[in-house]
Amino acid sequence: MDNQKLAVDVAVIGAGTAGLAAYRAARAKTERVVMIESGHHGTTCARVGCMPSKLLIAAGDAAHHARHAGAFGVATTVNVDGREVMGRVRRERDRFVGFVVQSVEAIPDDHKLHGRAHFLAPGVLQVAHVDGTPLAHVEARAVVVATGSSAFLPPMFQPIRERVIINDDVFMWETLPHSVAVFGGGVIGLELSQALTRLGVRVRVFGRSGTVGPLTDPIVRASALKAFREEMSFHPDCTVRQLRLVDKSVEVTFDDETGAPHTETFEYALVAAGRKPNLNGLGLEHSGIRFDPRGVPIHDRTTLQCDSTSVFVAGDANDDVPLLHEAADEGKIAGENAALYPNVVPGARRSLLAITFTEPQIAVAGATLASLIARPGDGSTSREIVTGEIDFADQGRSRVMLQNRGVGHVYADKQTGRFLGAELVGPRVEHLGHLLAWAHQQGLTVDQMLAMPFYHPVVEEGLRTALRDVVSKLSKR
Image: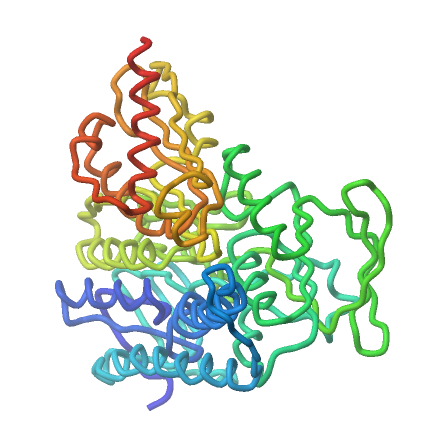
């Protein structure tokens, strides 16, 4: 029935990772919940993010390792079938999406609305079909905005728009292209660039401001840049002079590191310039909330509440930490607090853990060096930071695997010996990142971390080397 009137305790806008978590958390407190979704069911992670990108990366890694097996005395011949590669990516992607869709379909029909939500007033939503016709009028005691994010396309790419793709488009390819210009040296740009390069696609990466993934430590960042440049053309701080279409191809004129101009043509321009919250069209100006200079709702990251209003914002929509596990946590906190409104309570937030699935991998755990420098202490307390280092070039297990590239830094408080954070680039550091994030969340000191078991020979021994380096510097206090 169109234009039905609903009165609920909680309305959740968005059925992605954060929205589903918010719905489940709210429903644990009340049955008067409705979830509103205007697009395809299936999270960003499953449909166009984490999972399909890892499928492409896995294919690229398989080709790369086969090509380099000769160093172990194993002779190989590699032939990359682009259609087979992308066929598996799409099949497995659809499988992962199917699991999410099943979880949405399991939600009772009277708890779901498929349409676009728009605030008419605080707590009052008009939901319309995609064609604009009214679907429902919803009055909610509290609302969770969990609308996710979408790729950002800067104006400079408008002249070549017909050959521009975003990461979402990559996973719709039926076969691999011959060449791609990648704009963006962040996590998405690096992961896709290396995967495509390893699959035989000619790739050149154009970055800005020296960005190399999430790294802020200049020494670790330089090590990562050196490793990536051994495989692909990567300009982390590049001046692009001109973009134009030439015979249905993209012509890029740019300055290299010496300032010399170059022109190169590519089949596609992949823009990985970041993502922006999906907030347009929601009528948030009628919801009673305030916005920061970026146009993002001002909110408390421990409660996800926008000021003292009945609006809560979770996941990529709040442009805080765009990671799946953070979105799930935020959704749970927002859903619980929306159901309890106005009696909101702070939720537990985890220590930072961010991983880039390149090779070598990148991991950031606890605090970054930049954040430690920006916030040196608590209140008026100053903090002196001690850094411990591991160079994976000489790390035993890394050399055995011929994956001995990268550097890792761990940071500790000089006065207390407490572990503060780490930035790593090296082999399989996704596992080291987890250990370090756990240690950070437990508030461990470096001495307590060194008291833990380290097996031999494993990459984790490199972590012990860095921690011992910290101890040697702490002993000089």
